[in-house]
Image (cartoon, rainbow, N blue to C red; front, side, top):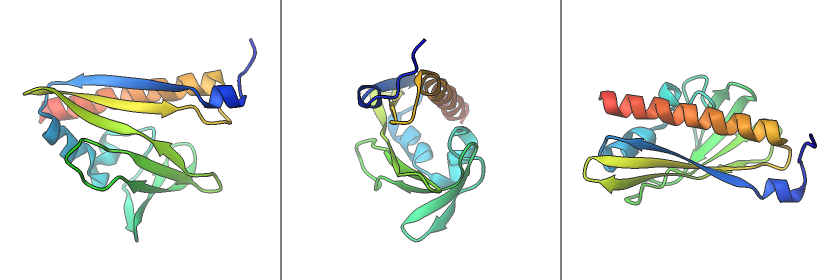
Length: 143
């Protein structure tokens, strides 16, 4: 099987969703708190985030230390963030919380395929994100 790494492959994306029995604003508040990230985002945060000027420093499970910055607090459910592992260009991670009913929301994370990703890495990241969103769902529904 051919491993795709062309520009066409880099343009791929996948929206990973998770329905949550939780009012969207409550989901947003928890998910937007960088200090809570290690509780549910195992693919991103292996340790507590440390504030550093206009960004945060985090130890990632695969890339070592990385800089992170987050979309400004908003009333739209936008949780976009940007991650820059050491020696790697910054990666944009679009993330939304969308209210779908009075006591339900949907988490929507768009995985953008990076130029260096082959098919296996893209699929692995998609599965990891799905697992992290289920963990966030469980955390929100428990509390």
